[in-house]
Length: 113
Length: 112
Image 1: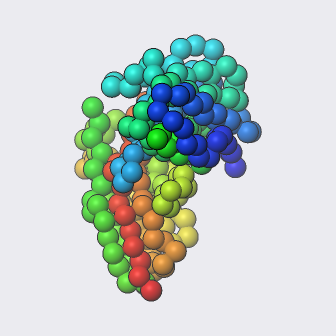
Image 2: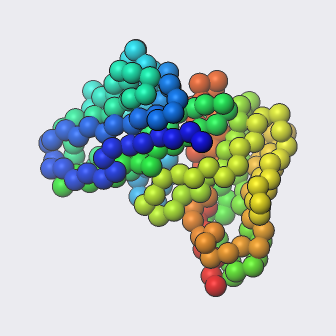
């Protein structure tokens, strides 16, 4: 089956620093990948659509200058949380869509202290 | 905007009982519907995918139905087991690129 990896699986950083999360599709060249965020005891909310070779499309209310997305190749999309604050602490999950089905990465838990 | 509602929000049953989880949506113009399972602190496990032209899908003890006219999908889990304890999420594909919208989830606890 389709496989998506994320790195790191968890990260702790200090307030004001930046954190980069990688999402790789291991068996598929994905022109489009998605980034979701999940706060504790809440559902997943779509943050942005990552398009290979072009700018990402952000959902309403998501700051594009704070959450930088780079989809430089067909197998790698990165999400950088810039100047992270404690309220950015969350579970970040990426996915790609293939053959009518969505495949998700295992997620990255970010804790900002 | 598509609204996705999952009922109940939480459910606790003794082992062996059947589970019925409901998911409703406001816009019938969906592409596909997918049910997921999420264990605490973990990612998502895909359970069943229903194409918009289909009415149901089955896999082992799981059966999911889709009724676009009423804006509802139901996940049935037969003969529940403690290992079925998790949060179950339904999600709609809302466009041809695969953009998903998730329900809030139903937290299930199956007691031995």
